[in-house]
Length: 167
Image (cartoon, rainbow, N blue to C red; front, side):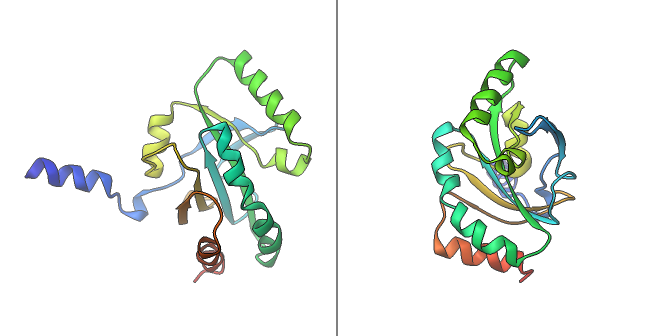
């Protein structure tokens, strides 16, 4: 029984203990960013994706972001593809391919690919699956104010907008 209780406690981390970890990588424009400190906004919508095909789920949020974020000065968004650690030449090839597929410079500036040991990163964020995108509202200190998974829905957008408004 004690073992089961310990397991349940480990799987249900208190919200305050889940923070965006400090990571330093280049955005797709080649500028080094240390996140979360270098996020532009005071509150940032962060999309963490693990698979190339998850980009379509991230893209479902784009119209809402364009319409809603301007209402909240001090907010921004980032796309964070998360890939297993690999050697520099392979990272260069992948980044070059992604850069070529994103014509908008502003989006490339907000895309930071992490080449890391994904286990500790996922644990620090309480992520239990790579099968869906993670959508987080994160401040510059790494505090997570709101979270969901998967593509855009109107219900998720209402919740996120309330979190952006501080409600």
